[in-house]
View: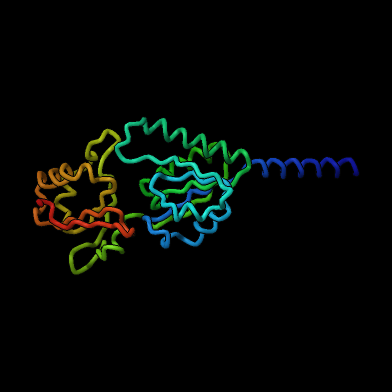
Length: 240
């Protein structure tokens, strides 16, 4: 009996050691830019982080919430970067895995929300495949932050806005997305369409809509640095 109990205790101790050697990763949404729009959960996790792998546009104010002893690694990419985005994303995966296997508390800090054009799904799948525990903390996606700070409701029953569509403004091949532009153009008066990362393709997006007979007077707004003090908004129509 004594031998069996000792063996069981050794097994439990072994499991505890293994668990302590494998850290946890949190995919955390940092919101649209303003540090005050972070969630309480995001702040708590940042304050206990040992490693923070962050996007390029995360502000210093947000990064300052992590302990001074925490490693801060900028793994971000800018839209239009000439580097191989696929290779770079694999490098991020390997960093997340390496730090977590050291038993460290790792925060993958992303602009907006991790699951809206943030590649959070790819990172979650990779870590789950390697047996790493992952927590996902949602953030205010940029579309909602911009709508609030610019006071432009994304839905409004008096103006026909009964649905919202989030889309990327350009593909990895630096072209407009391959979608049903005719359907999008015809339904533009009944929904709000938000293009993420679409600045460089603005002329092409408008041309596709007009070519497919969108109403030229359909309102359009361009928002830069949403929720920040240097926020800029330009209003016009699809034709202007």
